[in-house]
Length: 277
Image (cartoon, rainbow, N blue to C red; front, side, top):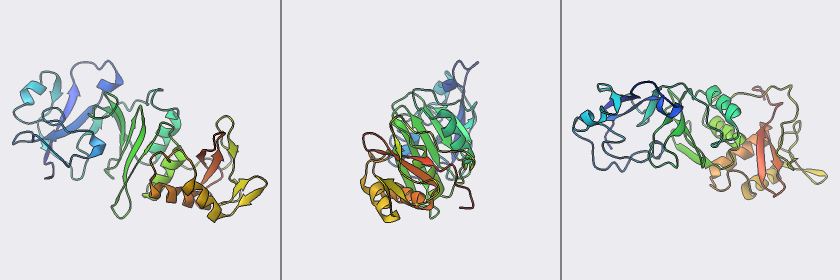
């Protein structure tokens, strides 16, 4: 796929009536006409549809009947196909996640400050909540089925995954840290993290890398085995990179593990972990 050379800005007519309509976003502009197919259109931008997710001279007059469409402008290199230009950055709605404030703090702290509801085709909702990193050209997408992350390692390799329907913030934190993003560190003076009903803390806040089972602690290698073979919130979409990141985070004491009554593992950032450790 040739690099996108131009974009146009899309904004609604009149006064927005909902957060979904308040976003001003950029989408590709093809001066020679919208291609019928774009097989390399990134999954993080949904599905491609000519004259819907892109604009060309032929469809520009019809597009301007419904929304404001700017004149074409040069496209930034390596940016998403569709991305937010301006937005009130509304919080996700309660039916998409139970972690709204903590999730937004995590994303903003990691530098994902370009937040908006975008009309990306192919997702289960008419508009999805998207958090883009303005310089890293990476994306977090939140919809009614869970959360997707589209990141890159320091070597430039893609790291992608899906968390849901339960969104484990510790797994997302581990994915962000393993790809080079600084994330907020909990206050070290805070006590134990709150746990879901019936959950039992099985890692030690003070003893990094040890998992408590019965009356004894497991060694770090046993903890690694428990994560790699056990059931946890990311297990429905197994990714060795996520498991390796979790193992490293448990060994270093950055995150804590708890076991739910059904045997599944959940993770929380260690409230006593500091940047120096």
